[in-house]
Amino acid sequence: MRALWLLPLLGLAWAQIARPVEAFRQALGPLPEGAKVVEEVRNGRLLALRYQGPENASFLARLLEKGTGMGFSGPFLDWYAKNREALKGQRLTLGLGEAFLLELALSGSLEARLTPRQVPEEAFGKDRHVLGKKGPFLRVFSDFQCPFCQRLAREVLPALRARAERGEVRVSYRHFPLVEIHPEALPAAIASECAAEQKAFFPYHDRLMEGRLGDYLGLARALGLEEKAFAACLQDPKVRARVEEERALALKLGLRGTPTAFAGPYLVPNPFDLGRVLDYLELAR
Image 1 (cartoon, rainbow, N blue to C red):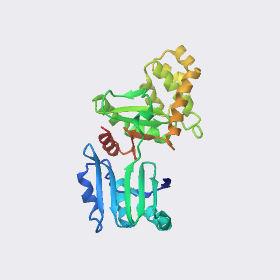
Image 2: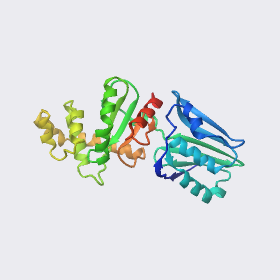
Image 3: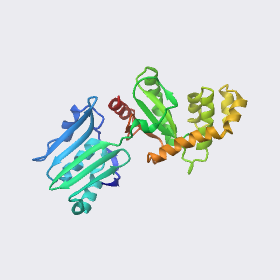
């Protein structure tokens, strides 16, 4: 099995994966003669799609766009036209952006399976910084200096925090400092760990996500944390090691940037879309 990558063009349609399954057939429209599409369902939500039938790249491209809500049609058709002869008798997996996989087999007829990218939940290890006590996990790999992470904290986290307080979901912060481009990412992550030592991770997190980077001891002082213990913690190699271990996990999982969010085992394609996040959390429940 070969793993390849296919990137979408700009533009979004209304995605069906993770939505209630009843909406999918109407969105997809009529099937080609002799074709069969099977929906795989979890918690009443569309989990994956299987196509079996005559070779029909145009229809498969439409299925990809309806399933993912992303503009894969043009890139897929271009790729298929260039690689069709080499595909015969082969099985392979295409990575569709970061969040989806397409398994393909062409031998007379065409077989395909579209799925969200998944990571077994046990691979994430222990969740240490968690909002909420019940419900599916949303694990967010993040970087305090990343402007997109700061945007997520402003625009999406408040609604998720409210749901966590009601016992509907759990939100887990995971460190992924992009040290190559963000010089304050690692020091900020270490400082947040020191705040966690005094049971103040999320108050400290919230202020870091406001862009208050650099004066980490001063920020601790403003939150009423014990300064001497905090200052000693900033120099503790064991604390730095915790952050670096989590960054190593993100790299091992193949993550390419921040924020990257997983609802249960499923990678969420657009964590800035609260409705999409909630769809995936229902899928993972």
